[in-house]
Length: 375
Image 1 (cartoon, one colour):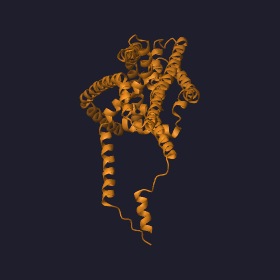
Image 2 (tube, rainbow, N blue to C red; image 1 turned 45 degrees about the vertical axis):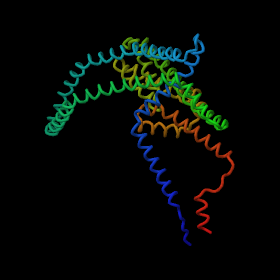
Image 3 (tube, one colour; image 1 turned 30 degrees about the vertical axis):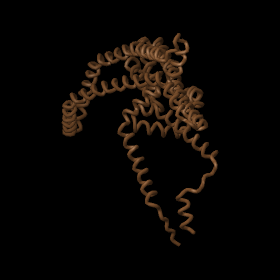
Image 4 (tube, rainbow, N blue to C red; image 1 turned 90 degrees about the vertical axis):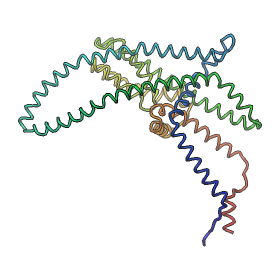
C-alpha cells in the first residue's frame, strides 16, 4: 500500500528558506569568528570583573560605575605588569645562559662527529651521508630564503594580537559600564511578566556559569602557580645552580598556561622542566615528579571542589567542547569552550523543563497531512 503525502507549495518554500537561512547564518558566524572571539572574550572578562566592579562601586562616594570599572582595570593592569616585570628577567637570563653553552655543545658534537667519520669510512657509508647532507643543505637554503617573510609574519601576528587585546579590553570596559542599563532596557520591553522572569532566570544562570567558571579557573590556576613557584624555590635552596628568581618565572608560566583546559598544565610543566634542565637535570626530574603528584591532587580534589558545582558537566562533554573549541577558534576557543558548553546545557534544561510543563498543543500540519493520507 502506497502512501502519498501532498505538501503545499508555501510549506515547501518555507522549509527551504529556513534551511538556506541556517546555512547563511553558519557561514556568517564562521566568517566573523575572529570578531566573535574578541567580543566573546570581552564578555567573559567583563563577567569575571563584574563582581569586583559592583563592590567597588558601592564603596565610592558617588557609586560611579565608570570609576569602579576604571579602578578594577587599573588593578588588573598593575598586577599583570608586576607579574611580567618579575617573570621576564629570569627567562631572558636562562635563554642567555643556554646561548653561552652553545659553543661547548658544538665542540662536543664535533668530537663525536670525528668518531662518526671513522664508522662511516669503515662501513662505506659516505655516499648515503653525502646525499643526506645535500638534502639538508637544500632544505636549509629554502628555509633561509623564507626567513624574512617569516619574521615579518611573526611581527604582524604580534601587532595583530596586541590590537585585538586592546579592542577586547575596550569592549569589556564598555560592557561593564553600560551592561546594567542595557539589561534594564531589555526587561522593560517585555509585556509578559512570566516570560520575562523565565528569561531573566535563564540569563542569570548563564552569567553565573560563565563568571563562576572564570573565577574558579583563575583560583585553580593561582593555586597551581603558587605551589609550582614554591617547589622551584625549595629546589633552588638545595641546588645552588638553580637561581632563586626562576620561581617567579615558574609561577607565571604555570598560571598562564593552566588557564588552557586539559593540556595547558602539561605545557607549562614541560617549559619549566626545560628551564630547570639547563641548570640541573636532577632539579628538572624532581619538578616533573612534583608535577605528576600535584596533578593527581588537583584533578581529584582541588578542581572538583572549586569547579564541579558550578558546571556539572561530564568528562565527555568537557573533552568534546574543548576539541571543538580548539579546532574552530584555537587556544582561545579551548579556554571559553567549557563555559559555553555549560550555557548550552542550561538552555537545553530550560527548554525541556518548559516543554514538559506546557499543555499539549494541537496536531501539527504535517501530522494532519500524514493522517489524512492514511485515511
